[in-house]
Amino acid sequence: MTAIRRGALAAVPYAVATAAYAGVFLANEDRLPGRIATHFSTGGGADDYMSRDGALWFGCALLVGLGLLFTVLTLVSKESAGSRLNSAVGVGTAVTVSYPLILTVLVNTDVQDPADVHLPLWHVAVLLVAGLATGALAWWLMGPGPRPEPAPPAPSLPLAEGEAVAWSRTMMSRVLLITAMAVTLVGAVTLVFGPWQAGLVPLVLGPVCAAFAGVRVTVDRRGLTVTSTVLPRPRLALPLGSIVGADSVEVDPVGEFGGWGYRIRPNRRGVLLRSGEALSVRTAKGREYVVTIDDSTTAAALLNGLTDRHAREHH
Image 1 (cartoon, helix red, strand yellow):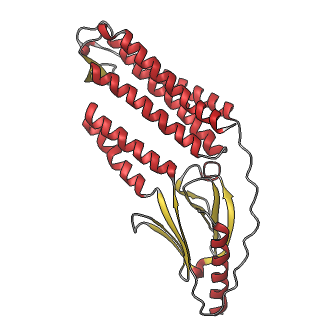
Image 2 (cartoon, rainbow, N blue to C red):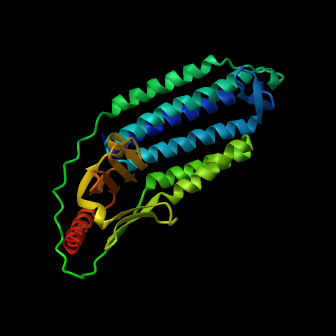
Image 3 (cartoon, one colour):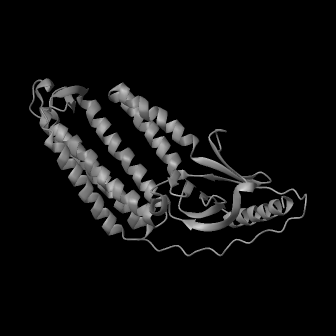
C-alpha cells in the first residue's frame, strides 16, 4: 500500500468523526443547555459538566489532534507490521472516541437541567465492540508488508594491540517525539477545558516520553553503551567481557518485541525506536540485545574487533 493510501486510511476516519461530531453538535446547539453533562458515573448519572462552547471545541480538538497523531505515526512507519498496527489502532480509536462524544450531545438535547442526564452503561460495551471491529477491518485492509531481507553477517574489524577506537551515533525517534508532544497537548487541553486532575498525568508523561525519544549508542574499549540523549540514567551497558559477538540485523519491533521503547522478551532485550536496521549483540549468558541504530554494520564490526582483542589479551 502506498504512503498516500496509508495516510488516507489513518486520516479519513478522524475527518469523518470530526465532521459528524461538529455537525450533530451544531444541528442541536439551540436545544442544548448552556452547561452540558460530559462525564457519567458507573450508575449512568452525570457527575461532571462543561460549558456548551467548551464541549464543542474540546471534542473537535481531541479528534483533530488524534487524527494528526495517528496519520503521522502511520506515515513515518515503514510499510510493515508497525504501520499496519498504527492504522488499525488509529481507526479503532476514532470510533471509540467519537461515539461517546456524539452520544453526549444527543443525551443532552432538550434537557433543562444537565444533572438529569443519564447515560446507560451498556454503551461502553457498544463502543468497545465497534472500535475493535473497525480496527480489525483497517488491519485487514492494510495487509501485511514485505518481509525485510536479512543483512550479510558483520565482519570483525582487525585491531592492533593498544589501538584506541570508538564509534558513536545518535538515533532520534520522530514517532516517540510526536507522541510525547501529543500527550502533552492532550494534558494541556484537559487541564484547561476538562477536569484539571485528569490533565496532570499526560502533562508528566509527555516530557518523560520526550526524554527517551533519542538515544546515543557508543562502542568503545568499555563495550556497548546505550543512554538517553537527555538523561544520564537509566542506561544499558554491556562490557566487552560479557559479549560473544555482534551483527547487523533487520528488526520489526511490533512483530518481534510487541512494541517500541525498552522491551523485554525471553533471552532478548531491545531498545527500539523504529523498525529496520539494528545492532544485535549476543552475550555469554545466551541473551541477545537489539538496538535500532543507523550504520549498525560498522558498529557490529568494531564491537567484534574489540571483543576479539579483549579475548586475546585475557588468555
